[in-house]
Amino acid sequence: MRRAGLAALLLLGCAAPGPNGDLGWGKEPLVICPTGPTVPGIDVSHWQGTIDWDSVAASDVEFAIIRVSHGTGTMDREFARNWSEAQRVGLIRGVYQFFSAGDDPVAQADLLIDQIGGSMTPGDLPPVLDVEGMSLDGQPGATVIANMRLWIARVVERLGVLPIIYSAKYFWQDQLGNPDFTEHPLWVAHYGVMCPDAPTPWTQWVMWQYSSTGSVPGITGNVDRNHFNGTLEDLMAFTGAMPTCGDGWCSGGETNETCAEDCPICRSVPPLGRDVDESEICFERGGPSMYLRDAMEGWLDSLVWTHATDSATPANYGIWHLTFDDGGRYRLDAHIPAPWGESTMTRYEVHHGGMDTTFVVDQSATDGWTTLGDVRFEAGGDQWVRVNDNTGEPVSSMTQIVFDALRLTRLDPPAIDAGAPDDGGVPPPPDASMGDAGVSMGDAGGPVMDAGCSCRAGGSRATSPLGLIAIAALALLRRRRAPA
Image (cartoon, rainbow, N blue to C red):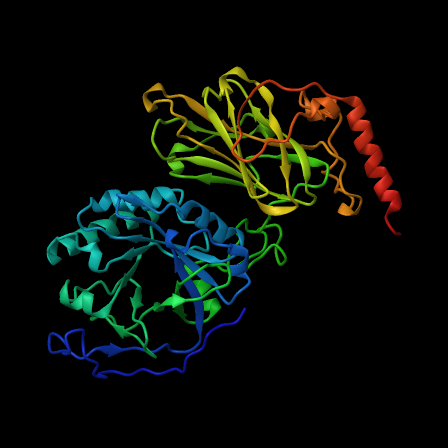
């Protein structure tokens, strides 16, 4: 990937007026240029919308710093997806929290730590404390500084790393009085200049946010652009981990092409269908991680569960992301093992071919595979099945919702030119793994649901041996027609 480069230069005492036309406090700004090569990166929040992270990774971007919240009151609704996607595509990632001096600083730190899973992941950047104008919350500078130190102490206690401080020259000077936090790496914000003014008393910066109107493939609209002060190897050393294929972490520029072992991808659905388990990378766990519990039961001996709520908006959710090799009509089944599913109003929201269909399921009445309905999916991605925790059942009822495997079974004949399915594409015989949800053809197929249809699903359909034979014969015919 390309790396930005700036001439090595260090200018001390270059006078530049402050926002009021003076230098403030009788001191000249400390203009610090990079000491050599730099590495390009971005920082993002939900203001960037839904990001195409594969396109971002294919650009010059090497690292991404992702907002988790503004204090304790505003969770970033895109954090969970951005956090997992940045890792999936092999970018070096970091997390930042917009500090709110009026909120409990320890609670803010705990929120950030819990959202990243309670510990540092090798190859991730240290957490960032973002301190700027809106951080004051009407508090005096001394209170802001004291609460910053409490936040930092909590991060050090739980994660064992020194966090990064993000701020700007004149805010740090005029609002906080230039307190000494130089034991922490500095991420400085300064736009429209060749080299940034560093807040006193720092004499160096590790990252520089040089634009808020940058452009990056995969992101619609403006995005913050940054330089890391050093080479890519320096950046990896700063995270404390060098990329090593086989270490279990997709980091430091590793991709599925360079290290499939560490950077798996979500396997597409072949023409005849397949099972998609919640243990796969295709499944996205959303919301506070502390409320999503794992159990060594269910399909492939794993499942995730949480409690239902009657809130207006979801807190936790699960999404099975789906990409299809061939468009067509598929029967959609969900594996709901007893006694984990207790909700009687679980909504499976299916986004398919630009449309939306909802199936309502009584999970408490099921133990095994349950048919949701028949859905027409298009070839390609941007399709999914989503389950939210806000079913309408009160939190006090402690009603459980379970997330386990989905099964997609082709109902109409695949296209002749769709390509032969991979080994995982042919559904197994009923006595192997299909249970009661085997392939269903003809009048057992049922109608294809239109957008906006709300259907109550439950039970399962009987296996159709003739249907299995027909699909297997069609696959064999396609193979014979394929050129040698």
